[in-house]
Length: 148
Image (cartoon, rainbow, N blue to C red):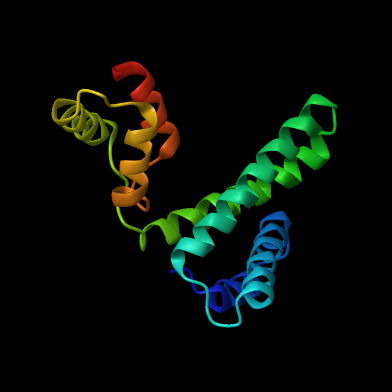
């Protein structure tokens, strides 16, 4: 799990610049979410969820800024995005390993062999019930469309 306080201390010790500003912004946003929503410490799963959301927001903003010729703002968003990605790597170390595509295919094949009336809804329900924390629902959905 990411220690937000330690990350904040690290950011404060960095020399002035865009990376320091980006790191401070991201870490403060994480800390605010942590204290607003959950008085107790957030776990790695929640931090991952928040960081993924921040990553999507920054990616979208950077693309819009670049498209509109605002390279200065796009550069700032990309600096924040780099910090978010590095923090995501730290948090992901504490999360369970995700199922690979081959593992998902094998599970779907096993389900298919045990049930002739198998449909996408049944497969998704099985994955949610048994593999919620370790599977990517978009991948499972795509595989279902290919295999069923």
